[in-house]
Amino acid sequence: MASGDNNLVEENTAYGNTNGIVLFPNVTNTRVRGNIAVGNPPIQQSTSPTGSVGVDIWNQAPPGANNVFDGNICVTAVHAPCPGLAPSQVPRKPGS
Image (cartoon, rainbow, N blue to C red):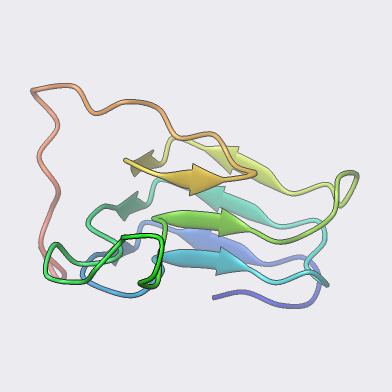
């Protein structure tokens, strides 16, 4: 999760959380690159309309906040690009 100005969120792995990578509304001039965020929320968590729904990357910052998303791997996103996973892309484990 990022807040403030001039952050670098790089080469992280986020999976099995309510949300993966979140940029809060006050975030500006932040670069989010080379991250793997999949399975947020975890498969065991309800995503029905009555349950909570999470996403892999969630950009809460307003348009014009100058945040950049580059080379991330995700399945779901809100207000951020989320390219599809290629069959050759395998999420890495933390520390590998």
